[in-house]
Length: 120
Image (cartoon, rainbow, N blue to C red; front, side):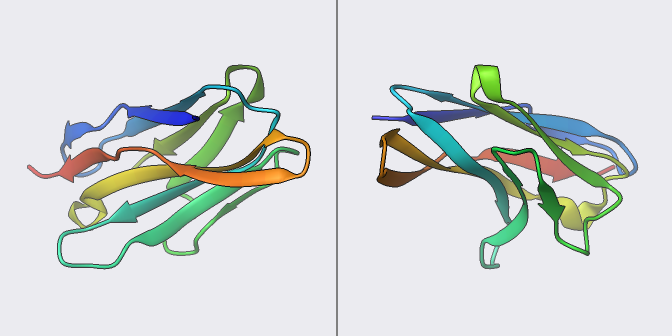
């Protein structure tokens, strides 16, 4: 069973920065893609961005330029660097991995979520 553990959330003032981490543990043959999502109170979960095993990244337009996704494949870890945070960025942030435990057998796992609150 692959588990994802997130860290780095917290309370930050508007304009501040946070760096979230999500590390996978368990038997993994290969990770293909790592995603970040967020869910604000009363809203649907939305995609923040993704990074592939080849290092290609994509961040949704509304967060582009402020949020950056990176990874350390040797540590099975993905990061979300968030700068110039706004109150509307307040949400629970989740990571999701697409991976294979053996060749040809794919699965998704979600992290437990980490709260980010942007407030003065």
